Length: 114
Image (cartoon, helix red, strand yellow):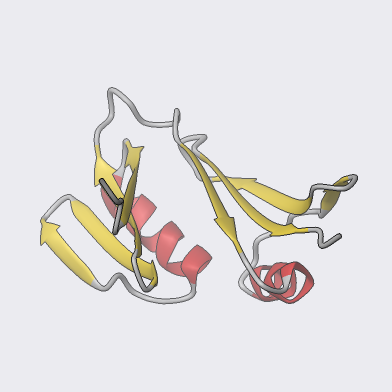
């Protein structure tokens, strides 16, 4: 069996507010809305992230997105009003994390080469 697509979701309590927050975080509107309380972004050829109204599970999500230039990405986040600091896990990865209004943690990472 081969996995061919990734579809990861983050539960939120206040969907309208979360939609605005994620549009700003991701720098664009969602690619589509399956229904009135879900928004989906395609972030890679076979990688999708969705935000869905689910107050019972809101705030417990963890999402890591790997980028090709973490410094540039953090700079772009700062231009959109998101403050975060880069930390390094020696020999592994550089990363910067941010929490959404519900407490879901989104981490942007760049693996260290060598």
